[in-house]
Image 1 (cartoon, rainbow over the protein chains, first blue to last red):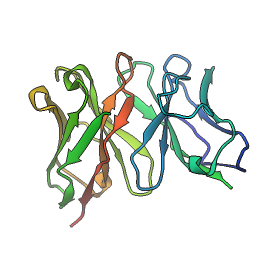
Image 2: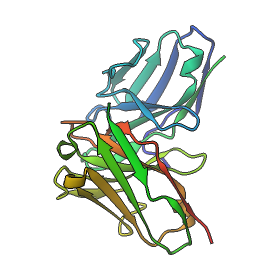
Image 3: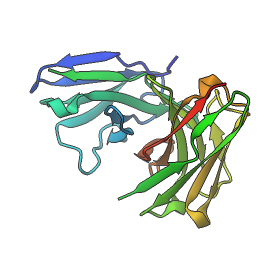
Length: 108
Length: 121
């Protein structure tokens, strides 16, 4: 079982807003990180420290955290955003990584 | 751009051992904590282990504690994962990952392409 809870799947039409939640006792004390993984590829960081975006990640990707839930939003999802998304954080002691089970985003 | 290249994967029998290697380049390797992560076929991501910049401090996921050992050689820009007492449940793609700088959690910011470990008779 996973210590962070994500919906297994989210489906949106192109141009719509996709919202993926990640719930767990790690928040709000610990940061949330989000990763995108396309088939056959390694994961790639898309959001770090709750709401920061690495260079090269489109502005349509954003993150937030409130209470025990972290959220990643894709505003105006595109077909190329179709992928599995994982959230990651730490337990409250900080020395153990915890992950969500992943959310498959479908854009069609 | 950061590069991480894993090697050492392959097929091994249950109860056997394997040693994975990862070489990092295009960043100051000795300034970063490093992770091993894994992903079983069709499954989600799992944290395996973390090693501090000097190698002094190591941390393990519950499922590998006592069987796996992480180490590093900063002179070779390399991190290793020694895996003993392997079982079918260890079958996965193993990823080497650099840990985000100056944060208190072991969150990766860059990942290698992975190496496949298959444990079967």
